[in-house]
Image (cartoon, rainbow, N blue to C red; front, top):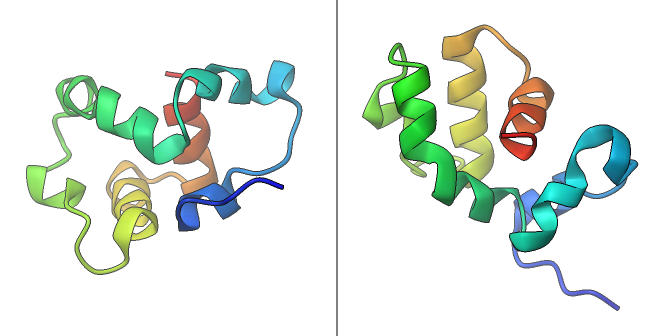
Length: 86
């Protein structure tokens, strides 16, 4: 039995690791951990994002993904895949 550490773990379950890039998350605990490692690079690549968009206030990690998706005009699912495959 695995223990889920946070809400983001619920959202990241399932899928084929070879097809959706989840095998890259093996070195990370979850998408949130990977995000912590790549967020500076992500900001450099997407300067239209404000530092304030990346705070975990109001909605936690899911809220952060929603803000990024809104600014980038993408879905949350697309943002998750982008982070997962970074």
